Image 1 (cartoon, rainbow, N blue to C red):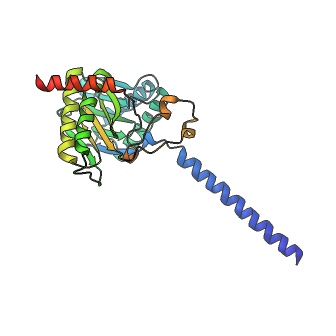
Image 2: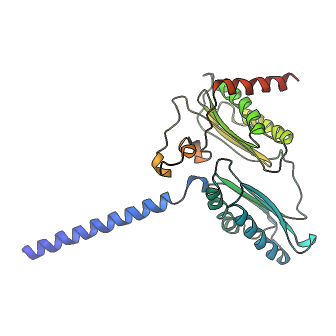
Length: 294
């Protein structure tokens, strides 16, 4: 009787230990996939990639991944001739470190293969980076072409939210140009972020961001959050009337003050918040009014 009871207790202990080990493994697996690798959208050509391009595609993937450890934007063309060349690029979100950029970009070739296969053009957008490639003969589209949008389900009509958001948009439009193509800030509980493709000049970047902001106003209306992706730039915003949710510093080891100041947008899309003082906000608003007047 005693032996039987001991066996039952030991069996129960083993089950508990195995369950705890399984839970720990699941928790580790979940935490090992950072937010910046979340898939936002994919764009795949319906036309398959001819065999002569396969080697150029592999070479392009290798070049992009290698460069992602050194820079947040890189564009290259590979191929033995103009008839079999492929142009590709990657860009990481402006707040990612080189290591995070690399960890994000290295996933893109695998995802492109799984989601699109070998096609003549592909675009894979994660929350922290994206990859785009196309064969030399692929039809070009306007940099202002909208390729993806999402608007939050909740609305804040009649609360003064739209006025605050539009003011934040004006601050962000000027900030992106002055910030070399990337800018994020908060203005009266409205968090905004914008980024232009790395090879877009200041004037074109400003025009692209302005276009994206106008589309956000029309497409999302009084929605408390939204994201607009144009071919050459993207913007996102989120309104937190009760204050932004706090992030646990221990997720990043608590040793990076810049990363620990992040705040989260819906869908875990954007994570960087740049705090501006009132003087800087007034200066950016003044620039925006001068441009509007002219």
